[in-house]
Length: 414
Image (cartoon, rainbow, N blue to C red; front, side, top):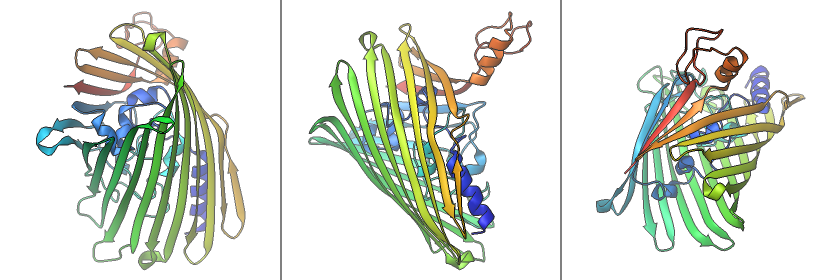
């Protein structure tokens, strides 16, 4: 790898900005993570969780949030369903078009440790900007985008077992790419000092081939993780999570490159119910490290460390409306690489993120919305006296409503 590219990559790792904290609109409105707060999207971390969220239709839609089609998947909609099937003896889930990456106003270090809750559809290297990849890098023509996720969960005596299979390819082109992965999740209740324990292990491989040309010699990732929660009394729950990914890439046939990478993520969360369970106050820390070596004839090494803190509130203000808000701040964002000489990056400035959103419940439907903070601040700085909540009026400086919804998750429970 050329020194300039290595410098760029290490710098981006150190910045750690612009990536969404999660897939779920609810959790993103709280600037949080499903490791810190229990959420539907924990199914993408621990496949056994499909048993808890069974019999649900799940549709995801966005307007202004950038789901980058250049990194696979739809730029406006995806979704699936989880259904309990008696003939199969468990819960079956199917999702289609789940994008690789999504960028919103909130961001998280987990983008750089291959977090499937952040990159949606996980593939070796963890992000579209991973060092290893096809000639020309991860661009729209190379990254797999025909994405299918299949889940199966079954209850065992004293445990829940789940499987998650994902597949994608980029169709036929000058460079053909394919990704496939399998993860297994196992969940327990009343596990020692914990009221809930979840563990997972997975393997995925990535393959690229230039038509009539080169191919890689093997790109793969192994990941393991655990999520544990304990009752601390007085309506307070503590959550502890740990994840490790090991990534290897051999592309010596193409340009003599080899890469080895290890990443680790530790999460600590505290959740306190208020107002008889109608509200939730939470706070937590996410800490990560990623390091590895790269060799294209000249040995290089890189390391990056991140610590993020967040606090959030979720409260039901009526029997049909829930409001959410959150704050996320980077406490540590550092990167270091060595390629003929050491370089160092440190960025903890201007990375405090404020988010907000809402939830509406009607019969079996739930709609969660993510509010565009920039648009809300614009309205507050120049109110449009004729505006409605969602629709612009005819007076004032800003032709917009009070609230601009950037993304919606719609779920139907049956």
